[in-house]
Length: 492
Ligand code: AMP
Ligand code: MG
Image (cartoon, rainbow, N blue to C red):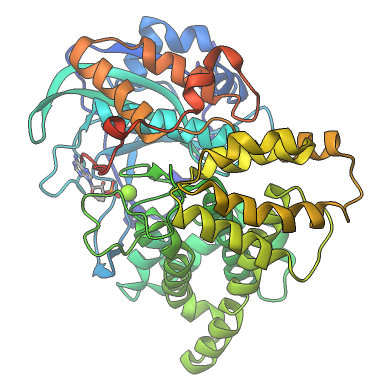
């Protein structure tokens, strides 16, 4: 019989100090919340099997499937700027890797599956709320076209976890092209373990960036590639109003995927200083700080790679500084290019970023909803009738009026006809994002009423963020004043 999950593991072949072998801890009463059928299919797993009692037993950690080699990965990191030499998977267990139908290798990991040697004082468990949030937001990011870890399934454990209160426990099955973080490199660097750094770098290059094997210096090329992927990623975040919330170096994946959806949030009204995470007292990870913080994280990555960049430390530092300098221009190209597309511009003019900047300033001064303003610009690009629905988003509608004249003059120089332009704009300006108040409502219904219908509906709507879905129009609405979410919690 072929195994139900076609494991083909490589991380487990790395030296033993890279991880701790540990099995999930069984739970009392597993109950399926949702299986991501399309993703299961992509991974070569039968979705019906995964939703069966046997599959759910695997998803809950009650049964270790054939071919799995469960382990907790070791990593370190900087948390809020502070060096922490040992973190590691404290509540996550890697079952193994599969090669998908698309030929891409991916990790399958249980999150909330019990203690590991890295749990420190934690219980190794996850509360239902964060499990649902990660499922909703990571799948929404994927549908938006943004590199991200995915959610294969969510289950209830039938057990309670103790946080501020007693809460139902859950397990999320996370899928990632890998779970290797900047902090994984730091784990070895903080121990002066150069062999470990090299083995890990070779693993990453072979796994994610095989074209770099041919490079003159593959490790320098690796740093460059990660800088590029991460610069592109943070630009994509800004362009949809995403605030990660806890950009510690252990939450920064070298694959360039978004990882760790703890206290994340989306902008409603545009505000570069927006912070939602309750633990981010200084606003270190505010919306507009994210590119700068990412550069800081990539500098920590370069430091960890130093011994591989050049034989002498001083030469390595010079190389690292040189390669890190590519971050700014790469980020700006991605961000400005994205802003241009959001405004419906396909050609480049020098004053375009002034035009974009003045819209963002007007939005910020007038509490205009970020997502809706851009979405409705598509209609306004069709004709003046579209303006009314945008004006109402600004405290002072006159602020939009003063901006639109310059924008229309700029559009007049564009080659596309208005209908094509609107279609192109709607492909980059989503109608639907996982609005914080919707995510909270989903969690509330699940916890207080055992009602998962809102969760299923939200996941369905967010699977097509760029389509007008008239039946679900209300999901595009910003929160009413009393619905506004001011704080998010990572809930660990
Ligand atoms: P995070 O804030 O999710 O990035 O986690 C930071 C560190 O805390 C990681 O090493 C996690 O594995 C660990 N951690 C978070 N929650 C728990 C928990 N409930 N039990 C054990 N370890 C945890
Ligand atoms: Mg984390």
